[in-house]
Length: 301
Image (cartoon, rainbow, N blue to C red; front, side, top):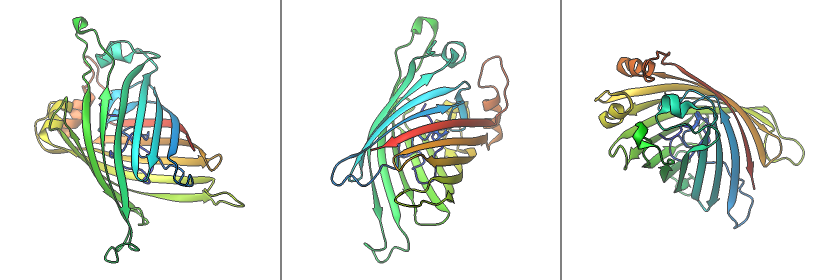
């Protein structure tokens, strides 16, 4: 499954690859999120590289891995066109004991990559618009290493198409997105809506372009069609899935290097989905609430 990103509201929810967070996010991870690449490269592409440590891998509010994961990310953007990739590494033997894909401790268990396009329409360009409208679309392919089928292991590859819209000019920034699986769970649809705001804690001074410290808060809700819910939790019906709240401290060490500690809380809204979340690990019972924390270090150039 795709790592759901937690990131800030300046990034797409489900449209572009990991925020972590995300929990993006990963979780924040999600994700996947569109990186805020530095835009002063003239006509040259902008690049971002990041490393994210997350206490738990979460997708649609469900735990894919209850142990920590490390994600290495890279992205390039040029005139709205993006190419992104992420490698998710297990830090424990979770995949052998609970994940069903074998022991991947210290090795990558997922490679996600894809391309997309984002464009903003502003009131300056179109007088009938009351505020800036940002549209985006991308496709993400998830590759998983081979498994031992003789031991009953499975970890199929899959592909997603994502599309979304965001209003970045509003104080409380809203965003909606749609994700469609076109491969392993063909026809599974996940919709998400979220709002968020970033508060400046320390303003920039001197020649700095970015504020040294800011706090980003966000909240959202997800919705799945029967195909999505059946695959995730054996519940063949339309239903609201997860609701989440996130907070991230964005510490700009320099204009190009950002350190972001984050936390997010997920819960399943529908009773049947909560029950499935509690019993998702055979022979064990856990709370349906997922609490995720992490630390992301990113560099733009």
